[in-house]
Image (cartoon, rainbow, N blue to C red):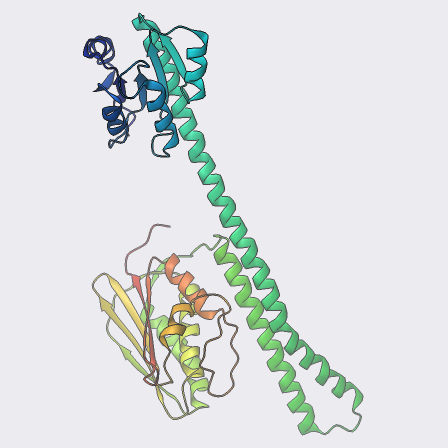
Length: 380
């Protein structure tokens, strides 16, 4: 409700005259709704929007005020609406019962208009403060839930990273011991062992780098360094870097670039996207195949697609492939390593660019990963 909108007061009394009297001096400040019995009162309390406060008579036929108040407080949709009893009953036990069923105040008849107005103002202000407090509590609970989730994710990262780091460390230590202990080790074996150590170090470095990237992204501390530039030049640069790697498997990278205008993006982060998607296409492609890299303009977006001729991705794997530390059914064709974090990082970077990431694939028919970025400068 807008702050300048009138609050809604529901007046419940079996005497129309009593409703009319209260309406006369309350209507300039409030929107008044009248109800002559319990059924009408309960219906009005569930209206949209509901009343902000209820003035409720006690002595009524069929359903008295205590029963109406009890039913209101028993329903979560109406439990928070403050109820003030307005009645000629003036015994102490009457007031006690009123408070027991959930009323916030008790005004005796005959009414004094200024007292009624003052009580209404007080309880509406208290109700507004209570509503704000509940909203703050919801925000706190939501943030606590987010912190719990981040802690669980952190613990998962630590456990999985430790597990994935153990094997390369064992390899490094093992081959380092061999190099230290073997006095007559020939040059060929030495180079082979050093190559294994180097590969293990690279694997650990990649895992640590990816884990740090995910940590920064998940903490909300990723800040884009946006600038206007040529996405075509960046795509071509990253493709050229991967062409020698693709040649080892006799994979041809086919470039299909359209003329596109300069756009706004973070070059280092978009390079990460391209590196992950192009390297994955090469890793999961058989020898003697092709990888197609396409750049085109689609309306207000620039679309980059990387298509391979690999084994494809099952629908089951497509549902979880952008989660952290996910190892999918298909394996790299030459035993290449994977941290299980690359696609999760890709999705987060695309999201921060306010772009869209898509995958199209069927088992046995390759996979196409596409991401679209807005051409204009985004608000971050």
